Image (cartoon, rainbow, N blue to C red):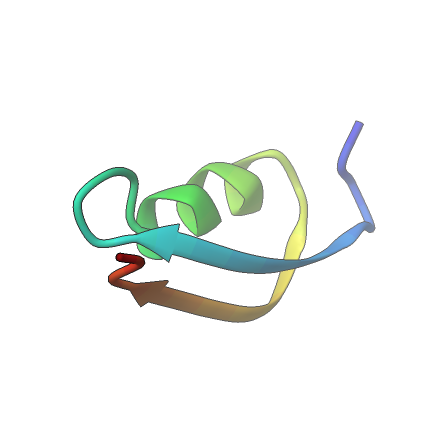
Length: 41
């Protein structure tokens, strides 16, 4: 379903990190253009 799609990933430090989200999307065939993990207060 995500094969050939592109994504920009923002994760949250205290919840799900950008690295984890990106890994799941890559496994589904998505290309990650940008990945970041931040602390949203």
